[in-house]
Length: 119
Image (cartoon, rainbow, N blue to C red):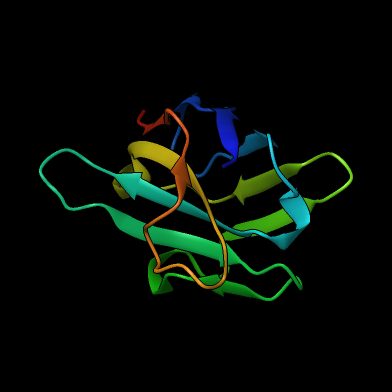
């Protein structure tokens, strides 16, 4: 089991940038599939980006070209660099860790960090 703690959320104006971090502890971080999800009011949870243990990345269409997911296995941390933010990116962002043999959306979750994009 891995424990996850997110940080880096906040209030930003449209067009601005934020970098979210997710620090993991309790297991061998490098073998985990790491992902960022978000939950906006009145909407279902959605997958934002995934990074596999080998470094392959996958993005939701709405964030392609604006968001970048990365991982630093030496620091047991996954990041989400968010640029050109839009009001529709407003949500609570959650970090997720799972083994490759587990179903997407299963595994361990962080407590979430609020991102608000507003002028």
